[in-house]
Image (cartoon, rainbow, N blue to C red; front, top):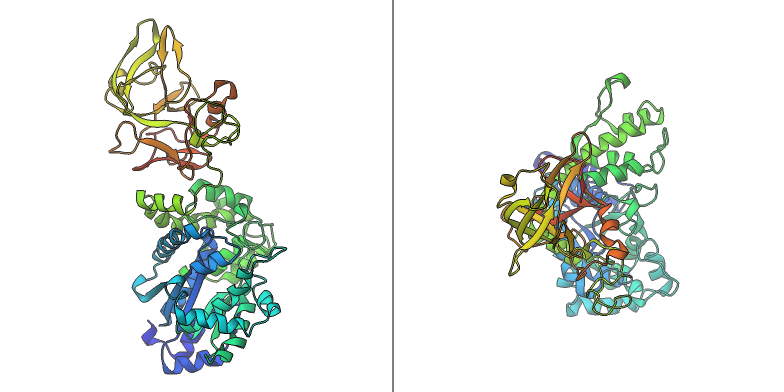
Length: 533
């Protein structure tokens, strides 16, 4: 396509939907002679969220215009910015960013072979770069450095010297990546102007700068990785997307600071060229828009309801997120996600509140985290009727220990003996054993259930290929340690069980986070929306 475009057409494609361009004449001059070289950098701090689709859609524009595009994973910047990324996690964060951003680009049809991916520390620790940092430090005043980073670097009462270095390093990147232009958000404008002021003082060329508008988050302010309610994570479930969009700021007729509308403008239209509002026929039925201005006009005039807008964005957004979610279902990428972003509230081993002999990792006063539950995959070895109760099964279940566990369950009315025999199931193994009609039950068989007439119950299913003894965890809580035994007086199981549900896709979840083994999701066959107990 780029071969068929004139320099003016390339310029229009490169600059469309941008809020500001510094150095337009330089861009036009380069485009008359050759293809433009541009880079976009991202500090590898918090997890990328759906607002990252905005720069991704512009990268798609750059490639259509024939640009040579470099994506910089700025790991050193992530550390310098008030240590938002701990040093020991830098490498893992870069790997996560590379995988998730490549998945985003693939989701919107961007050919990866036309992109160049660079890690900051691959060149920022070189002798030449380091000397240039010192040279620049001898020229830039504290005032200019602080001013340049005001909207990008985290502002604290007693700023670290590292935050003052940050803008200068970003300026130097333009020279060391050998580009004609840097692309970023308009919040980086002061860093861009610092680069234009100081790079020539080092004998380097002044670059052009391309600036995206800042897309409002769901709360009406800037979408931020550190503000959970303001953003939709790229790996959020469909239920999470629905819940967050439902809470999103979207007043009828109000087109200001509307993150839902902005997503339509800056992501969906550039990528698809159209947008469909889905609604009930009694309200006019579906309507396809081919220009954002018409969507905005109809919303301002309240002929498009916020609920219909949100529902339509939800459909379009899930279409973008589905390939990313699917890619990150692999055990390798799930492990990468959880090691790069360990849960800050993971259960501590022992420590304050853990009673002597009371269950290493999960003392009574520890946070109520699902990692305190010892849930394992089990295989039913035998099943028979309880000798003293027609309403109970007596089961022997292998959970990877020397002897199978004895489990007493009330599944007689719901599941036949034949269906349970040799079946892979889930077992909660750290409840206090209790006698049921004279026989001690050493664990609880976990099942999904839906109340009604009749009540329906199904044992939960581990992924195909699972083996007895494999640990089950809630995504995001992999590193916590289970209690040796749950204290029944503290009602730990009962409090956690309230949030155990089955999603509309028949996936077992705790607070919308999936129950997993290393092989994948825990599911049930048919009981959508059921409770787990």
